[in-house]
Amino acid sequence: MAINMPGVGPDAERVRPGETQEPGKAGGKRLSPSKLYMRRFARNKPALGGLVLFALLVFFSLLGPYLTHWDHVEADFTALSVPPGVGGHLLGTNGAGNDVYAQLVHGLGRSLIIAVTVSLLTTAIAGLFGTTAAYFGGKVERAMLGFVHFLLILPSFLIIALVGTHYRGEWQVLVVVLTLFGWMLTARVIWSLATSLREREYVLAARFMGVSAMRTIVRHLVPNIGSLLVVTFTLGVASTVQSETALSFIGFGVKQPDVSLGSMLADGQNTLSTAPWLFYLPASMVVLLTVAMALIGDGLRDALDPTSQSGGRA
Image 1 (cartoon, helix red, strand yellow):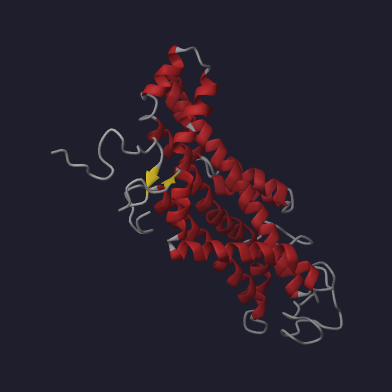
Image 2 (cartoon, one colour):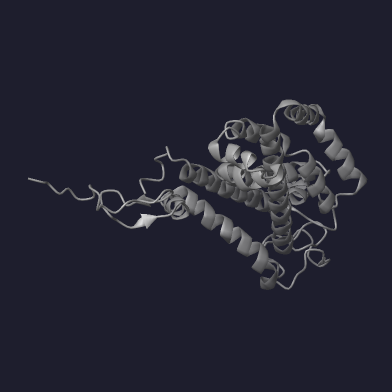
């Protein structure tokens, strides 16, 4: 007597490649990889909290200027170094009479622009450079890796400091310099991963069919390390915020009349005992932004890793 088992046999509904089913339910709703990753990410509560925190910080930087009539460069000479809530200043003023709330909003926005731009550019450069070196191999690979190693031994901090001082802290120049010296380590990691992909069947088939090298790299190699690039970009935002803050803190980053979180920390350190809000307010923003991006990066890494169980079963 034939026994019909659910989900088994020639008439059973098959799962397409790249899709998965709900566990414990034969013929259940299929999930595409993107939906599967989103579900795993949503089940990671710390990562979801980091995403909410990052969204709140972005909204604060965008909508914050509309909640005050003060500008970040406008000075109130009748209220110098007043504490929060005094003289119509929500978060007080600094020694020059600038509204701290207006400067905090502008500084957060400036730091976010620098961090996201630098992280996006460094991730793109590292992804293309690493996969290109792995694809060609041989002398091209050795030459490209030698170039990376040469850049790694350069005193990048001194170069960034000299350029930042020469251009008086223009944030566009800071973005260019941080990008030029921020992609090498990531490119080295991507190259080591892409070397295992260049012998895959789809890459060999593309070569056999005469597909150009750049098209093969962009269409086949880069998408297959997309999860690494996403995590690298997310964590790169946090590291760039720290780099920009450190440079501005020691006087090599953004300078007046522009303002960033790092420059606010540099100004606030001199009045830490007399006006502590000038230091602790921007410091809290740096901490919140760094924690948010770290949580998002950890959540994306776990969601994109098929062996991770931190996000629960999908």
